[in-house]
Image 1 (cartoon, rainbow, N blue to C red):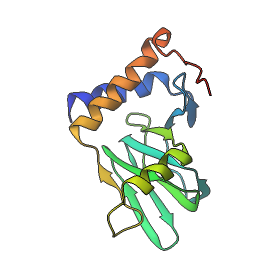
Image 2 (tube, helix red, strand yellow; image 1 turned 90 degrees about the vertical axis):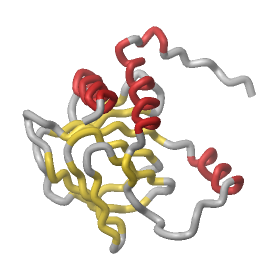
Image 3 (cartoon, helix red, strand yellow; image 1 turned 120 degrees about the horizontal axis):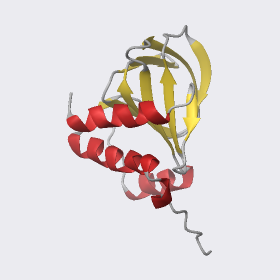
Length: 154
């Protein structure tokens, strides 16, 4: 396990307060569970979800996806799904970081940068560069005074 992933697990573990915790960083939440769950229906909102520890499965339509530690998935649109936590325990809780997406920004990216043809949904491993960016972002939770929110003049 990489040093960056170990640090992310430690930070997320310190700041998680229940199943889903909103953080002081706008649009960022931490998911935590110490127990596996049965399949549960949910509405997946536009989010980038990064699994740090544990395993989760999601069924969207007829597509079954599995998120393992150090993998991520992007929901660019709302989608009904059934999800379940497969691996979670008190000693090694399921931990994930969610970034709520701005749908208008995603739409603009899709117009400017055509996505490759292929699967509509897939999980991907988190690269070392992305892990480092996540680590630097979550470190702000230990230094909340460095999370200023600047108003946007419009």
